[in-house]
Image 1: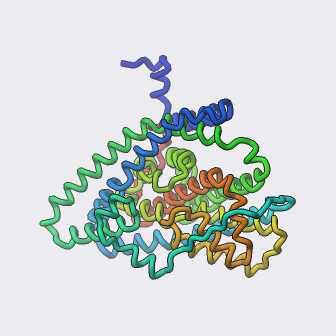
Image 2: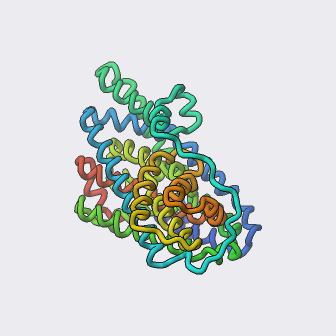
Image 3: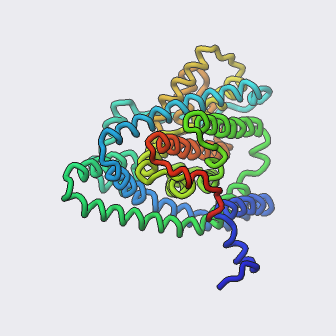
Length: 417
């Protein structure tokens, strides 16, 4: 038995989020101290990311089916789906507006002179028809193997509805998926025990790789993006929870710390999904039925952080090249960015593709996308954190509105690991 006075005992007494924060802090310090040599710790991060990715497909697939079969009411499922999409679109529009406001106030592009020569973003967003066609997997096994989350969602929803409709005959299969989901929850706990070491490795590599030479010229746009991201979480998300759900936003913020730290260090919304589910159910009291449906959808279509990034960077580029945008241009950025967030969510490099769409709509040079290429990873860490925070906020709101939120769990002080 380990004494609580030994270093190992003290470590185990710390809540998980504190261990992860400690790992992140030590990683940043190690990267700053050793520079590029800190990349020797990157394998720790790679192991952690691989372990997280290992969980994604089976966790999404099983929890979606369990969530749908737990509802047993097609009308309720449709109602939850409608609320989820509406809230995601609403918060995305707010996010772009906050990004535009922050850039208007702080003027990150003023006085910046950067060579615009570079590769243009040439990949186009898919059309609406193509998006709808691609939702249905031609081969569900292939969708599972390749981690195509939207196709997995469609396949899992179909299986869940079919299990409900066949009644008694479906109960053995429901029990199987329910047991499999519990196995995945336990496996997630094992992986999260390694999270502090994985986050340390990731942050040591990132901090060592990005030196001041890269950060100083574009420090202002990084700072504005981070300010806008924090403001969106504290004002919009906390405000919606307070006004619509009458919930204490402090409990929400403390309950999602684990997911935010993993999102920040990994820069992957899908990769953070297992941790988000754990936070939603254990820390925020949202039922598996709601969290198992809302979170996978959010990881796929909710891009509030990317929306903030679009607003900030679009105005940064306009200020940098000396273009004055009209109120119509501002409105076009909000509308285009909100709609593009759904169309490009599943495309690699979605942030840059969305940005190229927005820039082309308001007549800004696409070559300017290359300017932020060197700091995109740093911006990606912030926008991914906002995306994950938004997924969890919408999950709480939907759970509250459907009576699927355990108030006692939500109100409990977050001290458990």
